[in-house]
Picture 1: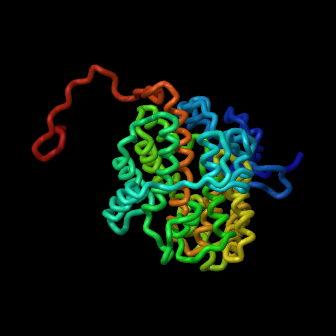
Picture 2 (picture 1 turned 180 degrees about the vertical axis):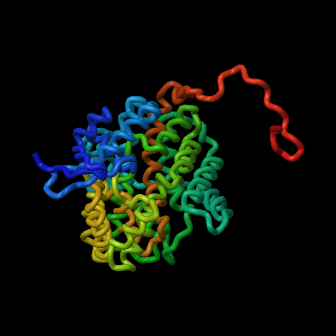
Picture 3 (picture 1 turned 30 degrees about the horizontal axis):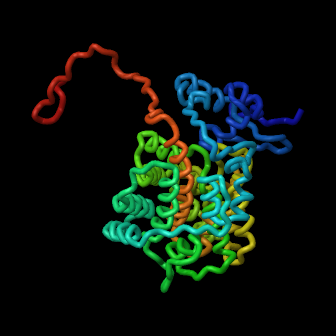
Length: 426
């Protein structure tokens, strides 16, 4: 049997199978714990697979016993959907391999396929002039330091306020809204590329809002593919928020606004910005070693690595890196990203995720760090609309879980009024 090494207390380190058995979970769930920072893994010399410190595993077992509601997937909310399946390190839109779709078809074509189940080659999305004007006026009133998600959320609200038919939740009306809202969001963002005209594919219009460099067809294809890859990814936090809003029969603009609100969290949409800044630091310092060391010394996870749903490399990252490696301008950032992955691999089994690939795209073409967040938000709006369509067909208000009350049991005495100083009497 291959030696797995020993832990700090002299005990033999555990294999993935042994750790899974102790935790009472599947081996892939063990890797999910690693990606969330709840366990650390190590691949020893000559070892087959990862090994784990038994003390860490036992501590996690104890925590899970104290917090049963958060310990296993069996207790998590489950929602029936026909949109996206994630299985065996791949993901599928309506049963079709999503990376193959994204590489072969435009973002608009993939979005239309997601909404209707019909592939319409050459389809493009346009927005009414009045809707775009309303959205631009609202966005221009924001403070100069406003982030991209702020702008997109305000644009969605303004577009909804300008649409007298927004409360029509029929399938035809919602799909019509989806086709006009996405280009409205893009058009509401201030352009960076001088002399740009809002024409052509959505990726070209979005590029003008992200980079001052004139794109060639290969770089535009990379951006378009990134949008298509990010259209949907099962029930991410923002998508769940959209379905909750749709369950309450909020109109599509409000449902998208709910998703954008959740997306702004640092653990969701902002992740690519952290990876972007890290790559610039690697390029500046010439090596990933000191950068990775600084991240870990500060108690932070390494941006752009690991995903709780994939044991290996994120398939979205694989597809996008395949395109970026063919772009000369992306060469230095691709090398920096590979350096980060190789440096981290000395101690972890985490692989590149789509945030790292997005960071390579944005860093290579002079885009700001928050550009990845913009790409993610625009792309995911199509998926949110698909989930809203599904939810409108379900029983209203079904997304209403019951709380598990853990506070003081009644009866309790009424609270005493605070003293004039604002403090409760002792």
